[in-house]
Length: 206
Image 1 (cartoon, rainbow, N blue to C red):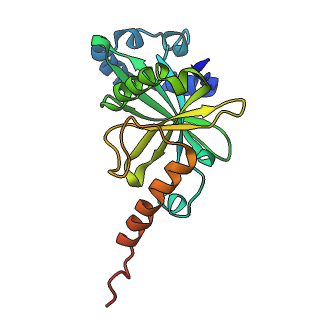
Image 2 (image 1 turned 90 degrees about the horizontal axis):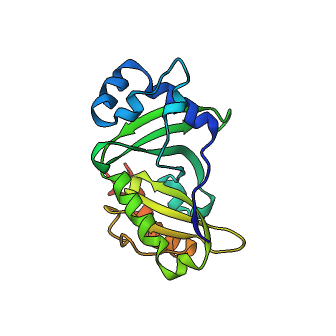
Image 3 (image 1 turned 180 degrees about the horizontal axis):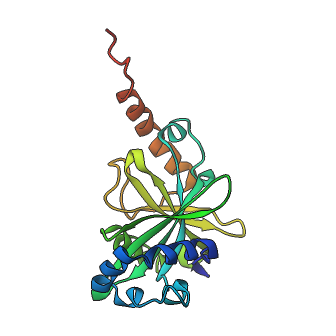
């Protein structure tokens, strides 16, 4: 069983492929990812785009965490595609999801350490007993205001969800550790409350 990778929506891949075929990005990809740069936008740019990994990214706001909202109910904010680059590196390309129309739009392209860190956590999790014995689908949970990004293994057929923070993360969390839904919520709620209090313009009085 272990971890299954969801199929990315066709609209997300098409939106990404169209964006990556534009001239400025094609020049960039010619240096770091020649396979993508060689895709033919006339014949269909999606034909030359084969993500290494695609997954949904779900986001929570600081107020939701402070209110104790179940992280498993976090709405999807974007789809992230990890693209192969030269030297075995991975690029992360995002398409945002319009919550009202369901349309996908190219949002960002990054070549930072996140992609490699996520891949390492997923590979590590595959071999851990509590994951290998279950049935999960890959997603990611992000809480930007707390600098939290976690591999989210969404349990299927009644299996409990597992959250694995990716380094660097908020100090109340331990990167690489496995958290259940309730444990993650209890751990992060005080941190979110403290962050909101620090941002309160009335804090400290006159």
